[in-house]
Structure formats: C-alpha cells, structure tokens
Image (cartoon, rainbow, N blue to C red):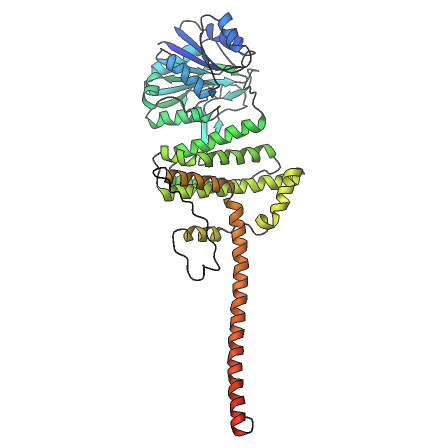
Length: 448
C-alpha cells in the first residue's frame, strides 16, 4: 500500500519542522507528503519550499479552513490510503505502518484513527470518540487518562479525530470530500466518519499508531467556542431525522442549563444559533426536507432557542455588571421579562396566519404582517428572504408587544362590554321611567 499524507497549514511555522521531520522518518513505506498552505501570514510556505523539497507544496490564495485545505490535498493525491494530519502533531516510529496494516487487515474498514497523546507523552488525548445524542456532544475515550495500557485494544468507534485520520480512497470516491461548511474547523471529522458509516464502512481506532498533538490554536476563546457550537448544530441538522430534531434534540437543548456567568459560552452559543438560523432553510433543502410546514416548525423552534439563550446572556450581563448589555436588559425588562412570551399566544398568532379574522379579532386580536412581492419568478424567493430577515431581527420584540397590546385590548374590550351592559340596563330603566311618567300624566296620579 502507498500512502498520501495531507497536512493543512496555517501559520504553522513553529510546529512544521517537528511534524515534517517525524513523518519523513517513517521507514519502510512509500509515502507522498502534501502540505496545503491556507494563505498563512507567517513564512510557513517559504519554510516548506526552502527546507523540505521532498514535500509537495500547494498554496491556497485564501484560508479554506481544515476541510478546504484537506480537500485540495486529497484532490492532488495519488495513493490508495489518504492520511490527514494536523500541523501541530509529531508521530512515533511505526505510526504509518500501523495505519496501513489496519486497512490491509480488514477491507470493510474505511477510516482509521490512532492514539493521540498530549506532548508530555503521559496522558491520552484521544483514543477514539463517541457522541452523546441527541445533542451531538462529541467526546474522546481516554481523555486525560494515563497511557497505561487500558486503551491499547483495536476497536470500532463512532468517530476518530481529524488530527490524524486515515481514509481509504474508495470512501472518498463513494461519499465525496469533507464538508467545507464546517469552516474553519470542528466537527467536520465527526461528520465524515458518520457519513462513511452510513455508507457501510467501519471506523476503527488503532492504538499502535501513536502521535503527539499540541492541540494548539490561535483562535480567540469566544470564536473557538462559537465554531465548536456552530459545528455541533450543523452536525445534528445533517444527521438527525426531522422527527428526532423536533422531538428529542430541541427539548434536550431547552433542558440544558445555561451557565449565565460564563459570558464566552453563552455568547458563543447565541451566535451559533443565529448563524444556524440563517442557514437552516438551505441545510434542510440539502437534506430533501422542503415541506413548508416543517421548515416553519424548525425555524420557530430554533428561534425560540435563540431567544432563550439571548435572555440568558442578558441576565448574565446584568449579574456580571456589563454596562451596555445591562442597559439593554433594563430597557427590555418590562416588555420581555415580566411575563415572558406565552407559548399559547405564539400558537394563536401562528394559527391566525392562515385563517380570516373573526369579528372579535378585527378589534381585539393582532396579526403578524405577511410579506408579499409582485416581482415575477423571483417573488417567492424575495418574500422568503424578507421573512427570514424579519424573523431574526424584529419578530420576537414585536411578538412581546403584540401580546401586551392584546392583553390591554382584552381589558379594554371587557370594560366596554361592561359599559354596554350598564347602558342597556340604564336604557331599560329610562324606558320604564318614561312609561311611568306617561301613566302619571294620563291619570293625574303616580302609577304604583
């Protein structure tokens, strides 16, 4: 077997020598090494070009992220076995032969991952992975445990990390390349393993293929958390059925307590939900879920989650003393937080959209604005785009105001009904008095 090792590079000058030297020291295997530079701002590409002529260098004009860089390398590769390798890794002798032997021993194995250790060589970072459904939380077997032999058996797992992941070429030919929408990274490796398993391939953990991983990142903490959460949401939307999304995933998300004191996590989760809302219709269409009522349910459910996280973020801002967000919270307190948007009211508003107003609703009930467009052909698309934008930017505050206004209308309406009843009673009493006065005039004495 021949192997092509693809290393996506981005500002990796400090790690590349260790990584490339350890790969080049792998003995007894014919190997092709491809480094894809994702428009690094340091001299990573120049280092490779000048010091490692045996490494094929591909320069991308832009940062295409982990998936994009790997895909460029995969397209350029020639070997039967492809191995994706992070720039901040180094591999032990025998790492590559262990990968290849695992593929050779079982032709139903489509993806292989090795044993990842922290740089100290004492603690396990990754020994295969598993997912906590329905929320799609990815976790690693053996994480932070000592490398004392307990994780030294080959087993099939749900996923392996892209830090060092081998792929049989026929898997790529069958299911395609990595999904570049997980840019810049996180969960694209999990997604690829699930896709391979859905196509009938096994994902195997090989403990003999040992590597060290610095797990470095130059991404700010809030951005990293945002990318992780966004990747998780994309993963569940790609792999859970519509029924499981509505009946299992979203209730589980709603039940998960939010740590409002952790500004990074709540803000990252809120931004991830916002981004997912913007891309939700496209994602559902890619899966063939184009039923309008289903799309509407999904949008509404994800909007409710976004609102919940936003309020938690504002509460956290108030507790932390964040001045700007605290002002927002104080301004919204009467309208949004006193009673909250009642689920039954939201359902009522939804039901009104497709039915004519009743006599009572013409003056008591409020209706959401329905967008229209008279532009030929593109009209429905423009209408849908306007609705999405309105839903994300203005819908929830208006729903709160509508709920409050309807409550006021109901109170005023009841008061008007009471006044109408009082007027009717007064009118009857007036009529009776008129009759009595008339009889008194006819008889010359009061009617008793």
